[in-house]
Length: 108
Image (cartoon, rainbow, N blue to C red; front, side):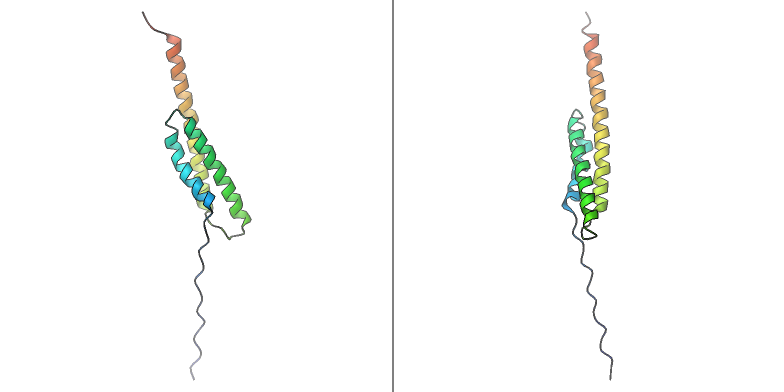
C-alpha cells in the first residue's frame, strides 16, 4: 500500500499595497520637477508626498502585516523631502535674483 500524497500547501497570498504609499511615491517623484516652476509647486507637492508617506507608514504598521508598501511609502517620503528642499532653494534663488535686478534699477 502506498502512502497518501502530501498535502498541497497553497501559495501565500500577496499582501495588498497601501494606496497612500503608491500616492506618496508618485507625488514625491513629481515634486522635484514641479519645483522648477518658481519653487512653490515643488514645496506643495513635496509636502503632500511627505504627508502621504507618513500616514501610509503608520497605517502599514498598525495593520500588523496585512498591508504592504512600506518601502514605497518611505521612498515617496524621502523624494518628497528632496522636492521641498529643491523648491525652497529654487524660490530663494529666484527671489534673490529678482531683488538684485530691482535694486540696481535702469542704467541711463
